[in-house]
Amino acid sequence: MTQDTNPSKSKGKSKKASKTEMRRSARKFAVQAVYSWQMAGQPINEIEAQFRVDNDMSQTDIALFSEILRGVSSKSAELDEAFAPFLDRSLDDLDPIERAVLRIGSFELLHRIEVPYRVVINESVDLAKVFGATESHRYVNGILDKLAQRVRMVEIRARHEANKK
Image 1 (cartoon, helix red, strand yellow):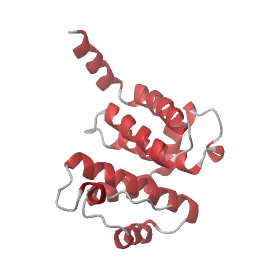
Image 2 (cartoon, rainbow, N blue to C red; image 1 turned 90 degrees about the vertical axis):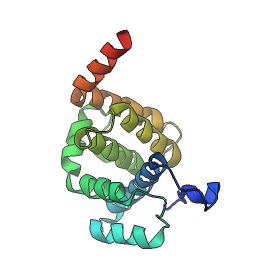
Image 3 (cartoon, helix red, strand yellow; image 1 turned 90 degrees about the horizontal axis):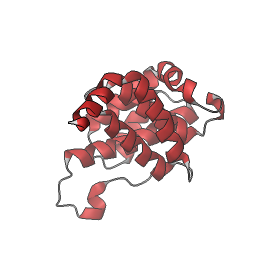
Image 4 (tube, helix red, strand yellow; image 1 turned 135 degrees about the horizontal axis):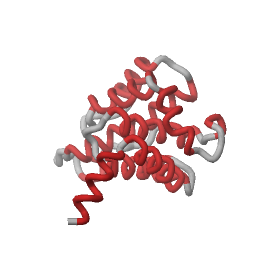
């Protein structure tokens, strides 16, 4: 399930990745690691160590990768409970990639409040486009948008008010 997500390979080794690219890389590795954790049930510290050894993470925000991976694994029940009301199927019937992306997006919406909700949704949609089935990005977008309406209402209202001016 590992895909080469190192931005330096396509842009030449001499270019340092931007903070945005490093965070995007962290999320790509995180979705793969969460997927692996969901499928194998291996201890999260082993999965994290394996990813650090098996992948070139020099262009990755490793702290963010670790925060997402550990946060999703330790709070998976809370995250599932947060987005489950918006699903059109049972949690067990979700595609494992969609579940991993929804867990990551939910984690960021609930626990990384410094990240704007639109960034969280856009990054999650991009992950679903890269790793998910053909239309899974639309599904992920709809679920996370509904969750954001519930958990980021103050931020959404402030954005709407600022746009009116």
